[in-house]
Image 1 (cartoon, chains in turn cyan, purple):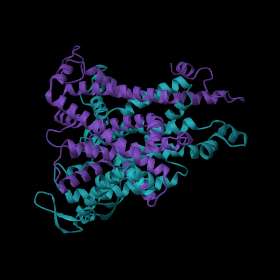
Image 2 (cartoon, chains in turn orange, green; image 1 turned 30 degrees about the horizontal axis):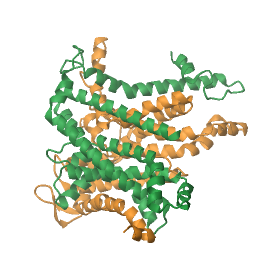
Image 3 (cartoon, one colour; image 1 turned 45 degrees about the horizontal axis):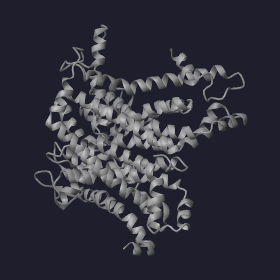
Image 4 (cartoon, chains in turn cyan, purple; image 1 turned 60 degrees about the vertical axis):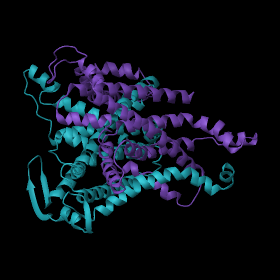
Length: 306
Length: 284
């Protein structure tokens, strides 16, 4: 047996690739394909997939889209061209995820920058402090945040004790946003730090000596070199945000609906597997396009940062 | 206070090179901003966790007023059969899926790093997909799959699914390690008469061990942490701990959950220390 493997290169490759390839195809690819097929099926009386094949599920997503330009000033300037239940749902999910990713990035970058410039001992200490939330259960962390913000939680108890108005933040879009930033911060800081730690600061000095100001040096020298970390961190933040379920439920109370939450409902509360599959497929396409575009935009070798 | 800690944390100079010209003022302002943002961020990350731990010792059942110190919630955790059972399930699933994911992920990384073959590019792309497919999609697609092939949901489906989402992370970690691997050591062993199997057992495997252990820790944590995918592929009586916690949180305020959370946090700290320790040893 071993003799055979030794002599045939292709057999050896098959032996090494085989188990992983099998797992990837059978338990990842095929389920996605089945999901794609089901998204074109009708539902039976219990909400499970049944023949005949139809485009109805996709039609349900787009059928109520109307051209209906409007401007409102509720919660800032709101300009809308189209109306539609699911259009709005997708738009809200992408928008909240995008904004939360940008906020996370704006917080994480200075933190990672500061960490990377610390002396060695302090650097490992701060790295350790980022690793703990990174490795701590996401559900537990989100629960901790919810606990803080509850109506009779520690923050409001403190505010009342000080004679101040309690804040009613939980179950609002703002709470979802805070939850997303809180949950994803470690996933942004860590890849950024990995890139920044390798950054050679004499390059900035060189840029300065060649007449670049701080902003130019940052944009033209630093940004391209730390872009692998930037890309990795942003994807690790954006993708889970679009599909987020825990945060929407615990921080938003299900009131600020997002696409991942709606999908989950099609498979639990209001059973409709074909429609849920259609929504999943659409979400996956959007996320993949966003990720690919983003990967393309940051040039250089991305594989080095996980 | 913040400017004091600037000096403490950075030292008079730290590793920041002294600026020759009259730029000190502007830079110390920037440094002050960095310190402030960093301190606030760490506070933001840690205060909720710390508060939760403190309140896990609070005897009040509801609300956030401190009554008195108690260990009763911890006692309840350890005497609750459902909690212990879900914790055991979580551990079983984590151990088995870590083993599975590490073995097949490492083998795949070896094939991809060391051989050229047809279709390699396709696999390269495929192995990235699980990283960018939202876990909710993975969860429901597996739910549909197990329903389609008529496998009843339970520990088996949990292990299968956990291997599926942990494996790509093991693969990516091991591939990076293998890229740095010095193959001349293997050649030397073979020149000295070792066959391929002996070379693998005595040279390759021991040298890869630190990478294998850290990817195993990663897979173990990913598995223990997972809620969304487990939620969809779990069956009656095979609940994992996060799935149990989820059910309790949705039902209302239960101080036991604070205690479990505190315990899980301690476990994470332990795992991080273990990972750091391994990396440290590897460097020396």
